[in-house]
Image 1: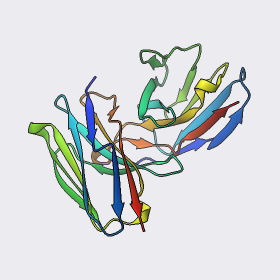
Image 2: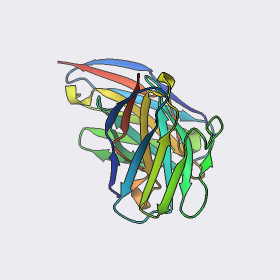
Image 3: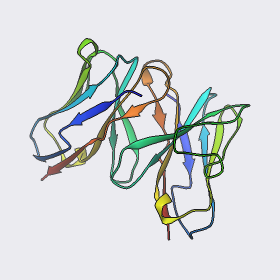
Length: 107
Length: 114
């Protein structure tokens, strides 16, 4: 399967700070998604972004498919942004997940 | 995007028993997937559930331990059999993406085996 590497593994932010999470993948993909897992374990779909750039409020994402990486930007972070962020990719129908980035936003 | 109802949301079970997790989707979908997330880990695909045929299991997962049913295009169950504490995990179902929405996940079942 496709190898997915996420960095950094852990991120501690002061409320209001900006941050960038990175996802590298080992092969061409036809689907890339960013998810946020909240403390209750629920997996929230943030972006479906196999290529290009998208924005949703304080979050935005960019995927450069030719260079096999994606970036998730969090601006003006809030305590509710805390949790684990996963990148997942596929080039058939099976999603491969990265190890995640654990984000802690302190008030 | 599809809406998935998964239950139970959590359970505490005795070792040696079995638990069946249900996943109901609000629209017909061809493929449904079951994932396991062990404590502090990422998600691992257990199997792909296809309507009208046996599930396809990933390496390291077997039907005797994780039997799956898929009686129609909106419903699937995963059973965790003969449980041990090592089975304590979050189990999630997912359906294939529809257009620009990607894959959607149920809210998960947090299982603790004591």
